[in-house]
Image (cartoon, rainbow, N blue to C red; front, side, top):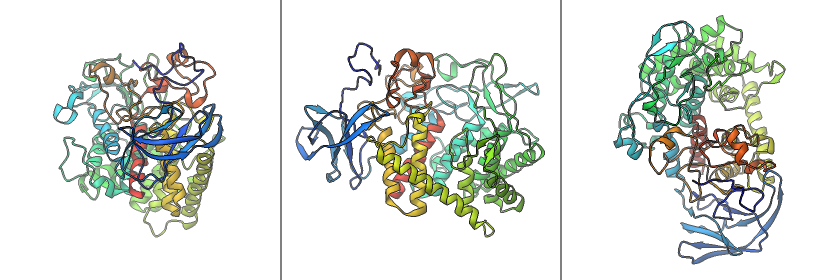
Length: 558
């Protein structure tokens, strides 16, 4: 097993990477800026092919000290090398991992990060024809017990949320929103993306078929009165077994207003997409969205979610639902143009605070979904859309992008994350920043925003202070022991490719992380490739969808 932190090592922090020069291990576009980070003093670097032949030589530039990594950073810039091929950076007798230059370096990555959702499917067998060596049997098909109302219900389908086998409405809605907006903004990218899933060649783009698998489950999570149950899980996380061996009783937990609003929003968003492919399904989605919205109007109070005694599965609790309602109103206005949704959106938009906390109108995560509501209003093709409000939202995105650009340019690794942003799932924050930069490129046409968005992908794929690629299956030195039950239980040496890892977490939020990572480790190096470390090394559907969104934008706008 690779263990990133070995106390026998002399280095104070960092891992046991065999490479001491850090690059995007997937690669660089022919015409893009190409840099490697050298975290040691150096003057000259060379670029050599797999045979050791030198193709480029240049001077190293000292960048400065980086607090997030505690590294003194030197930059090797080889942007002028445009010859497609596979290379390594060398300097002072040290080398980087292999990387590639070409215009299609991210094509397979987009495929695998998108197909990863197929491997997260619940309630069906993954056949060898589609899953290869990762095939397994049907799982979680027994009836689930309704905790609040009593009785049982069939609740098959949907995606396993993360390294565990739970299914959650708020995270599922967020994940679908990333994928659906990526499709709406960059349809040409997905029209030719074939994922080799059971629904391929159905006439639907494969990414929409994958979203539909989750949406069908989300519809089952709605009560007749419109409210949505918060989650469906067992009482405790399964041990490290295959999903078909997890035979504990499944429960459907109580409703929450955040889950109801998120279901309302994502169904309206999905209806706006599926109406061009399946009108009947779009009508089902619209009806579900309207039922949920009517329930929200009848219940203006916040109804939070709390795990009952004896339950340790994911909580995904929220402190307010105002951003969820903002998203719901925005999507339904965009879909229908009705005045009541428009009025509600404008009212919520004019109230920037809730419970004394800032209402974040740009956030694209499962716990703060205001950014989706803002996107909904920006793309709404409605004559009565308020130009001042839409313009204000655009200005917010652009202002945020300038702030992110400045952080990117001031960081030796090109990251937009500051020390306090290395929390559980920091790679999601990295991807969200990249998405915002891509949106700013679309809104302003400024290339600098695109370039900084691309830098975030370079960080994810190995040009970071650990020198590791945080996507399974990508890079010579990559995460290979994720906190993902099938990867541990399936007996297969390889891991499903294209799974995005949570990444460095300065809070070391699980006991194994605290044991493995030495105290005082800089934030960017607070990581261990150990399957026990769920706060560092887990996978999650909403991390993958964030990467898919960013990759689609990078490909579409290059």
